Image (tube, rainbow, N blue to C red):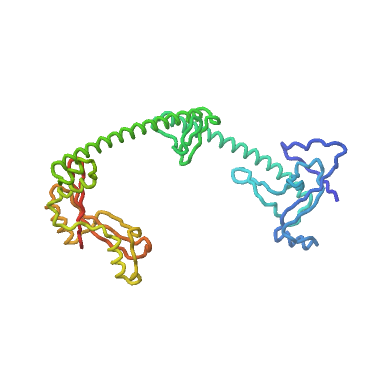
Length: 373
């Protein structure tokens, strides 16, 4: 049955364009909506289908084809879904679901809803377009403000990764990464990439020059240390060390160790701290239940060192004796926490050492002594 319902178009909505005389006067379309529980009851009482989702096939006059949408498969549907409603502040809200009725609607009601929905859809799109334009304008103002601040402050830099180029760069602003592009930005924002690239290249040159100066200074210091070691070996080294120095084969570490031995000779009676943590932790673990066959290698050992927060009477006495024997050295207590990498839940062992540090010319000499509990 063809249903033709008289309907007043909403204000501002243009009628559909005229069609050729040979075109059909109606189009069969699907109209889908929902029935509430009350509507399902009413439908059953009227002898109709009581399902929640209702789909009808109706004939729509060509004058009202603006109330019809056609999906990609070519299926025409009455514009009931999505539906649009006025929300807070007279804003149009888009709702994905179809309308719900408390009683089966008439064709006139469906057409009226579709017409109202069509009008609100137009307003929703206009509203979205205005909001999009407003957001774009706000974004342009933000980018212009950030670019102007960047250009006016020579200390500001673009993000180094990815590296700035003459046309593109990233800047961290307002807690987000902003891309500035010479080809798409305008105004101050367009000037930012080339300036950011210029500063980036200038920083690279300055860093390279600093590295060269640092390397030069390190080489000079190394040569000074070699001369100082040569002078010390010539004056205090053994004949064997002096001979190997003359031949240019004396290891620097050996020479520094000899200097350290002489500097801390007054404390030679104190035992050195032994770096045998793997063996000591293994012995310690095997004293605990469940670890009787534990095997700890140097690769399994985790050592965490830190300044000691407390000291036993014996450790304090050791510390004071070393300070008396080495008045020119700084002596402090340190803890060494030994852990087993294979089992984080295994017991840990804490050892202590007394560290003596003394400056001797160009060298900082260091020696570590045992400080048992």
